[in-house]
Amino acid sequence: MNRTRIRQVAAAVLRRPDGKVLLLKRAASHTTNPNKWCFVTGFVEEDETPRDAAIRELREELSIESAPTRSGPVVEVRMSSELTLHVSPFLFEVENIPITLDWEHTAYVWVEPGEVTDYDIVQQLDDDLRSLGLL
Image 1 (spheres, rainbow, N blue to C red):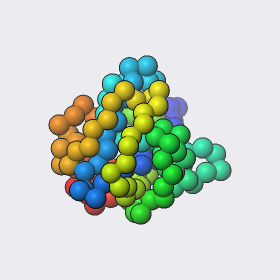
Image 2 (cartoon, one colour; image 1 turned 90 degrees about the horizontal axis):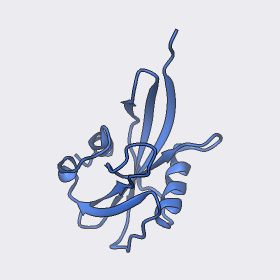
Image 3 (cartoon, helix red, strand yellow; image 1 turned 120 degrees about the vertical axis):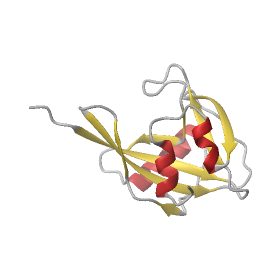
Image 4 (cartoon, helix red, strand yellow; image 1 turned 30 degrees about the horizontal axis):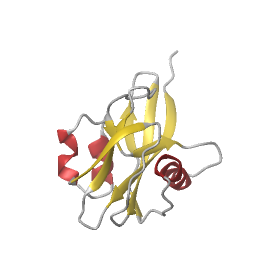
């Protein structure tokens, strides 16, 4: 009998004072969703809370130290019959900061929340914004 595996994921949504959110383009070499646009995301490690994972991923991927100002309800993303992701979105309010990309991303853009679907985004990315009350 086939059982669906559930993985916990944290998503860090960065928002500037002008209301725009940061989208990152995954590198072609990325193992999941290559060349798709996303937020800072990562798997929640054992003995780690989703909030702590979001803070860690933000530090690892963009060298930004910050704490979330808001969290939203979990977004369930069914990747396949074998894998479902439980994405915990967190909102980080940031100033107009410089963005330094790591190996996982090749480009970035600041967009209005309603414009994210104009990009080739990872599955249900807009649901993260809805969960945080931004859409």
